[in-house]
Image 1 (cartoon, rainbow, N blue to C red):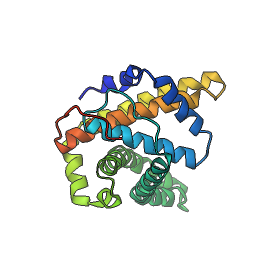
Image 2: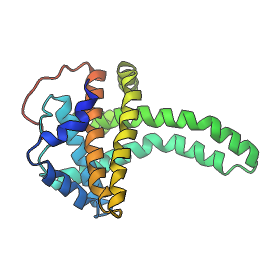
Image 3: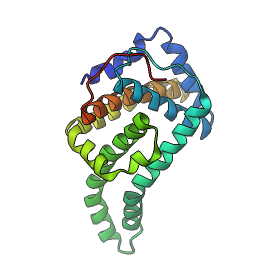
Amino acid sequence: MDFGLAFSYVFRDPQWVKKVLIAGLLFFIPIIGWAMILGYGLQIIRNVYMGADTILPEWTDFGNLLVSGIIVWVGIFIWTLPVTIISSILQFSSDSDTSLLFTCLFLPIQLVYQAVFPPIVTARYAINREFSTMFQFGEVFADIQRAGSALAILFGVTIVAYLVGAVGLIACLIGVVFTGAYAGFVVAHATGQVYRKASGQAPQPQQPAF
């Protein structure tokens, strides 16, 4: 795996400015635009998995991007619901001291959970395009086991990418949507690499899948 490539490959596309700009503009369209951006990230994951990651995907079939993004949102919501419920119970416990103690103890578990499950199930949908694959628990856990420490590195890449994206705050909160789009592309590329490792898929350069 080459996580450095996740940060640099965007700029190899001659049309990268246009493609990042489209993502940035979509950010200003609540829900619908955000779902389309997520759907576009799924295209990146799939292309990386297939070894066709030399350029960014084209912005086409916005309806498909919208539907794919919403489906993944639903899947991730379901996966994160257990930890969300537990966290809420701990925060609203009547005993404030006990609540604080258990919240502190639960926080590392919550972070590990968020670092492990959402990337894998997102990638599974990106590759298979079936909602049910996000909940094939045996295969999900097998993918996590095969990915191993790469998931921890992916979590670090995600943090770094969005710290880089936060540079857009300098531009009066407007530039952040464009640097944020770049950060999302970085994370999607890194996720594709991790899932390729988890599935044992050797990269086979070919035409982009989308």
